[in-house]
Length: 237
Image (cartoon, rainbow, N blue to C red; front, top):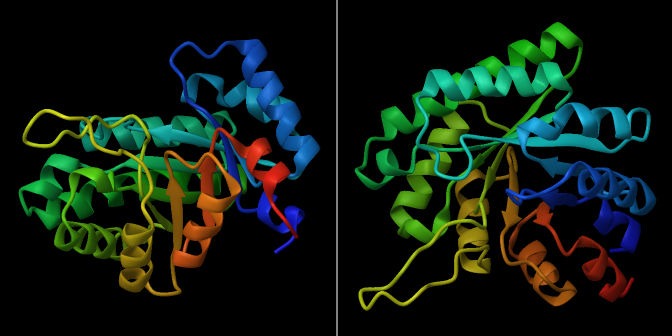
């Protein structure tokens, strides 16, 4: 895989709470320079990113229900619609994690459906096919829960399943912090579960080319990274 091909798999990401206008403009400038698939920004920055990236071929991605997934479905749906009308081409929604943990697959699916339908409807109004990715927050889930969440996302007609927000705070029984990002075994499980009909996005803790290569080999066809440029510089064609 060439550097250019890798760049087209990367969502160049800045979701920090303290991100500034200047930083978002710089993110967009970098995305245009390196040819990333998209920039991923919080909803408040969608209009700015859309203006900065107009005509560049770089998509605008935004996050919905981020990072907890605990908003009401109607709120997530409204936020998705607004993001698309503001200029987003893709939305990454956090599913109802609590519902997944309690085994309520119907609620997980209906929550995703609300966002998918709202985003696609808004996309139709502005003449674009919006991509919806569902963040599972795999660090909180056991394998069976990951499988069920993937199937719910597939049934809800989402386009991708995604591993992580990068903002989760999982701990073991002793209170020790656990890794909260993308793991190859989870990516592999997600790919096996959804098959070739959906995308799989790995996100969270991807800081070097070696890790990126492992996740791609496991089945990821999109990566969410804030270390995008470093990864590209390290990549060997």
